[in-house]
Image 1 (cartoon, rainbow, N blue to C red):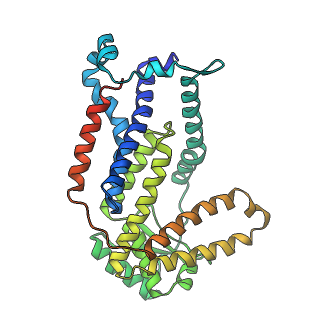
Image 2: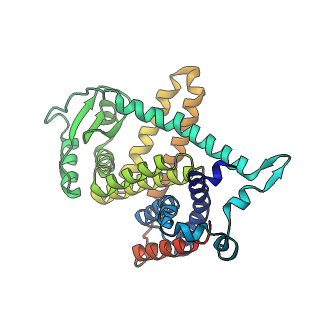
Image 3: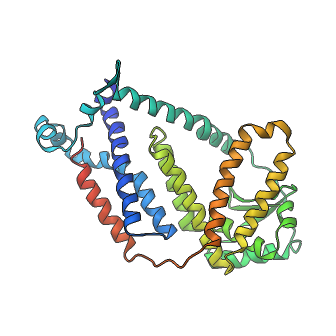
Length: 329
């Protein structure tokens, strides 16, 4: 309990408490206002990550007033330290559970995300050759046209000599496609897949992704931020799906491409034998669930009525939450 009475401990405990309240409030507003536009949902959920981390720092301006006993006992709505000291069972208090949750979340983050990320950025990227001009006219035309539409410089296209269907953007703004994906997809599917990948290079998506990554690392200890991060990451993929559909004008191209690629990956995975039955299969099932959701969303695409003044709504909601959280110490 000594840690949670220190300056750093108070910050962490406030972030955890604020995360719960802000997440409930903003998700309730999304549902109540019937906001279905992916880019707006993404902004609200980014705010659900940012506000809890930023609010305690903003309140440092009034740190002296909020630290006074009279404020905590007579004015504040809620005293986090008092509740953290509450006993639950045997000799276990609430702060034990909170500390354990933070430790487990941090450990999972280090093993599953931090270490692989560091390894990825330290290792030399595969040296795939540049795509020969004229060897894939549909791909080259799609990259040129869609880059122009997005207002970005066309990325260098590299061809991976792999039969597995793969396509992704890499460091240095490179687009890497495999021989397998060129052989598997038809023209509409390839254009849609290229549109999705190029959308990741557009300024708005790129800066949103960077902000999301920064918030993830800053809140690596926060178990409540963990599911929000992955929800925002899925929203980011859906946003790129929407951009791709707008670029091609053929909303069925991308779901068809995703289904084909997923089926090919399943068949390739089954050939791995018993190893495929372990953790790799569990990870594949999670990816498959995400693919199914994206395909279902594309196939059942409905005309959404934009909610007026979404940024104003979010700004007012954020200010009101900051005002309420000020009285939770």
